[in-house]
Length: 193
Image (cartoon, rainbow, N blue to C red; front, side, top):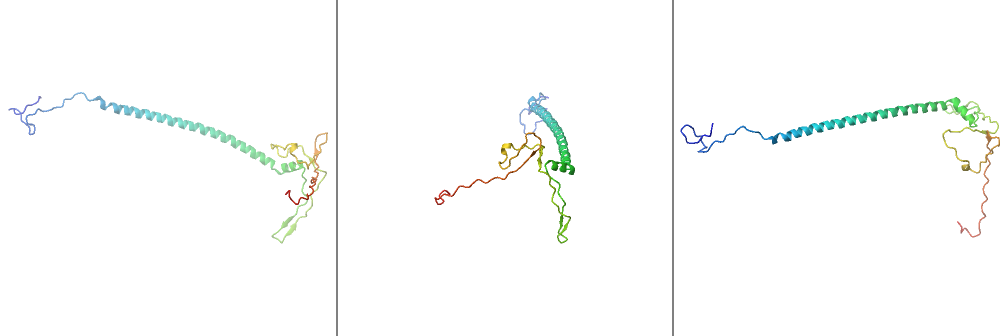
């Protein structure tokens, strides 16, 4: 089929075409430029998706390691807390408190009395003073283990402990402090105040 010239005997002339030649489209090569950007876009999207998936997986693994570390730390701290609570329970038992009080030089109380306020202030029991024995000997045991003791130079001068040469327990004697004499007032009429 070739172009048909207008005005011939065998061909019909279409209206509006006057004597012009007809344009036909031939099938040929499609332009490659239209597919390339789409293919590049698909490859970039796939690469970005894979990299995002890798980053997400890495973050989840990091969080899992952190969670494991914190669980181990929690277990260790829970064990330590239970051990300390057991030690507190042992040290706060009545027999342990009585032994520790005796080591510190305390004596048991005498008879105790209670005041019954709702019933008119009635006294229940018979009060008695504590039975004190010989002068209290200083214990060599620490009153509070783990706390630093003040240095001997930090003791006030009013308390003068006496230490026997043989070592062991010592008797503590507290001497009252003698007040320093006051200076005599001057005759200047208070100019120094």
